[in-house]
Length: 189
View (cartoon, helix red, strand yellow):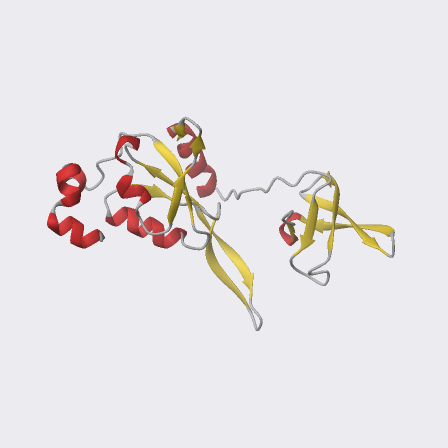
């Protein structure tokens, strides 16, 4: 639909600056798009192709495969992309491949202040990464190391970004320190 519509003038009639100005939406608000997890790169490319200015912070991450470890580029916020556009003309954005919806409340999409995007870019460029909110009492699963697959309850968050997890074993508790990067929250049914 994209190139055929552009060639036929459907988008250019509704959005005359889309082709002539390479970034026509740079003076509009930023919004957070929920995208299919794993399709962040494809969505960013599609949005750029349509003339938008998307931002998807990434970082290099070590991934474990069955036969090796590999460093891959991963989204800092999996499933989310920031994009600058006119919310009154959102159809080209929400019809882009991978886009599910625009985050917001009942009254519509909620803009992200530009200062937050600027600060986020600066922090990511300085090496920051996202932190998951794992509060005491949440069930977590170990994702790496010798205890991979073990589930437990987060007991407390101690200093130095380490977690203490209680593992219920034979109706008794055991706890250990484990890196936050080695656990993930367990989805509740």
